Image (tube, rainbow, N blue to C red; front, side, top):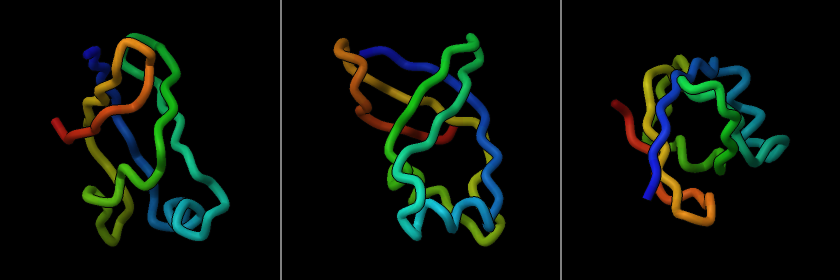
Length: 72
């Protein structure tokens, strides 16, 4: 399994788009400059009234499919 790191800053207003179904995926740029896409609902454990903010590690398999995300 491979892992990449990135920082997210998604405000509460923007996060509402994900919950309303206007956007189903999040695209982030990793520390290495790679663009990664993963399901927006994977962020639910990290949502606060201010949105989602912090450093994260994204795990994916050898076929580049999303496996897990965790705050670091």
